[in-house]
Length: 357
Figure 1 (cartoon, rainbow, N blue to C red):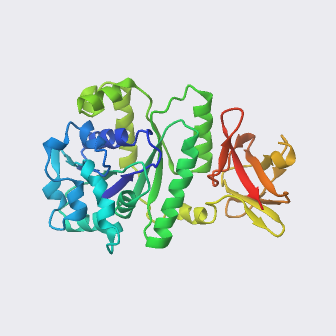
Figure 2 (tube, helix red, strand yellow):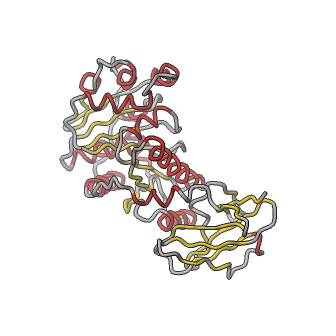
Figure 3 (cartoon, one colour):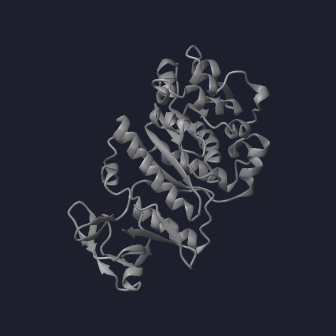
């Protein structure tokens, strides 16, 4: 059984839309699916036609009542699809569990006690990294991260990897990251450039499937149905069917060797006595250079040296102050994928920021 948390601290990225429609698409290829609504907004429940008047037990009870199990709270939505619904009462979980020993493992512990005759469990999380999301990650082996064509998506991914590293290092639990371009319109140059940046920076994590924008997804949610029930012939239905096949066909590698690189790369450049140490993990690149405000945004850039582990590095003497920079990867200018500190440049993209004391 696979347990997948749908996470992104950025709102409006298509997380719940993906949870609901991926669940429906997985059932169409014969998978038995449980969708857990882990968001106090209850949008996954609403998107499947349930209001708070339609259920008595919910995800809230899985956290706070030890004798209520998944099989008690689940609702049958359709063939091979069950839902544990949620409502606004879920906001009370964090204050009620404050100071309680093991509060971050309540959801996982409930899963261990419950009867779970499923191939896949999907957990739709709130747009925040709090106790609910931490519980979902500790109960999961994978994290699916929907990303829209927004400049803030870069920062969202960097923060997600940082969270996964904390979960691994402090809790001893590893989660495989998977990135999905959702509600993603490739007609704009910005979206195409962002896709290229994400593919270069997160090699192996970015899924091939792209969910294209369409009003039909909103119509389906308003009608309380999945897109496969609302308009099975639509492009969105085909996109989610493609996503279901791609997810179902992936092997789950819980060793997460890529995260070993990220532990040392989460916070961008590091000041050393010799200068500022820049390092970037781009194993498939042929040529990597550094440019920025400290070198007049040279088009040639400062060359980085490739190490045997696939990382590129250089040390640059930079004066005190805040400096903007980018990498030039095989001729393409990219922000630092390992540095969440960035500023918007005059072209609408992002420049990474390093501050020297």
